[in-house]
Image (cartoon, rainbow over all chains, first blue to last red):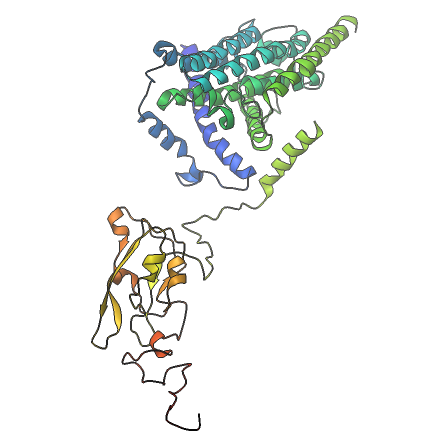
Length: 313
Length: 171
């Protein structure tokens, strides 16, 4: 019974946050570009999301006749399912956790790898050359960044001596892992941006070259699922960064732990949006080069150094 | 690497800059006096129509949005019987104003012409004609040198010399 409430609560909060992020992103981008953004519908334009959702629900749900229909319909669902499932293992506050798994990190990594399927299948089923190019880029980018995304957080796992996210947070009672694991944090941050294929790493979408890439054939609520899935991914990566490097719910006691968790997550979400506002998209080969030649060795050195320090000190 | 961090920081600083947006319906932008907006037909200082229905504006119009029919009153003065501008076609290029020999047709600083019905974008003469003189005050085409249209006698116009007495020996 208690679980049912937590699950419902997490779903409600997470989905609403993802919807509000659309508004937040537009407002913040506008702020950093000296504009106003949506400010007409409701106070500060916050009901813009509602208007958009109503619009997107009433749009024609068009499935291209040349597409592979079952796969085409399934692809956005996979994205939402994998991301929402991962929220089950995230500890929002002590006791506010759906499922305290002892392999939570592996669960997160596995689910984010599965998420690639939605993009690849969506691009493939669209039967469109731009979509296929986007899907191809997405698979290569995800494969590259999956590798050292996993490796970069192994340092944290070694220091906390656990795969459970709850225990990782509890291990940060004294110092947050950002300080001993700074290299790991940097690599994970870059990999996280690439994982959510957000700007500046939105190479699978690349409006300029690929006309929205893997989801160019999607319309209506299926596109909406991809869209909300992107923001869910941002929330998820921010939450994971907070849990693993910034002490999760830890914070001064005058405010409840759940506030600290959401506050830190919010700051990272804003940082993701700031990245979008400031950085240009790298070329495709540059992305792979940085991944394999710099970030992977950096993650490996980090894991070696952490291991050596734990072993000999 | 340094440039990436620098550009992130500089973008962040834009949060404290002034926003460039003009919040339009509440805050009207300044339109210069020569702004090319809605087209009007002006009158001369006597309160009569300046337009002489010469059709030069309709000829100059690149999108053919002006249509008019000329007529003559009892003095032989020409005026447009109807004058119609289809603003759903008009591109506000101002060629008609340049072509007009009498300063009758003028573009004014107003662009708020939205309509729900496309047919309402077609303006007839009673919508176009204003009571004032527009941008060029005091100009009266018929008071300049030229033929007599019941406004002035021969040789009495502005910038016009009296007629030469060709029978006088002194000229």
